Image (cartoon, rainbow, N blue to C red):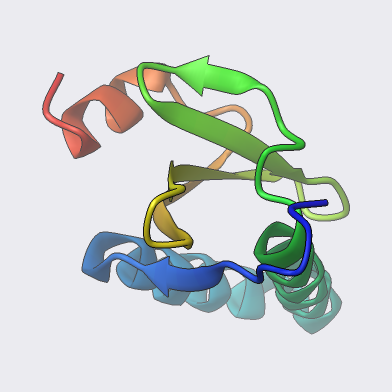
Length: 106
């Protein structure tokens, strides 16, 4: 826990596009998979606002929160001065780390 402070969750435009892409892809298969993804996303988002430091450092300045029910990972950065968490990407666990490197220009 971070004490009494609650972190604001911010989605980058690219992360919002990731969410749209994933939902469209999952809905074209089974709607229950899209529901699982949505539930996972809401659960982790709520958790990050209270405890963003729980997940370990993953790559460069990013942390990774697994969306366990749907097989995706949420990548985020913490601004502990302004109490913000910026979600920068959401990729499937089987996707290459190269996508993440491109996203953050490394």
